[in-house]
Image (cartoon, rainbow, N blue to C red; front, side, top):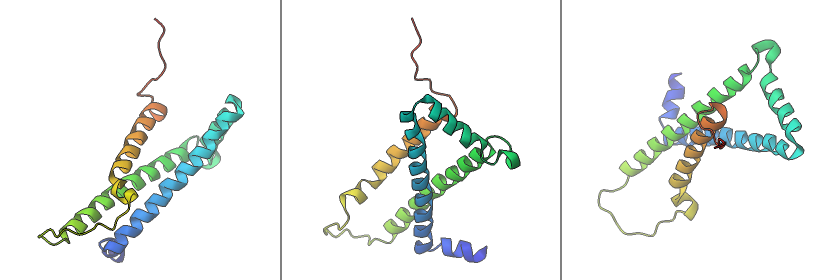
Length: 144
């Protein structure tokens, strides 16, 4: 474990963690999108897909246990991703010289907006979970 924590302490180790957790989240997004495309096949197809997700490993783990493992893994991935990025940004800023020298920034527009887009995605995830997983947000209008 000591070698692992030592490696995580390096910039390359942190960048590897960001890459792996990013790939985990990307894989989830693609799978989630493909599953939700079943909505275009009708409500029955979407319901069957949702039931299949609930029953994965049910004979060994019980209903929805796999989903909770996946949720916990994704939560860990998101937290580790965000924390590691914050650590990398702080490390990068402390490595800069104290005197600011005007120079052309070589970063791309996408890199410059990464913090904004990441924050928007995080807000979307929280709202999405609050609405569909925990039922805290009800978007249906009530009749008056």
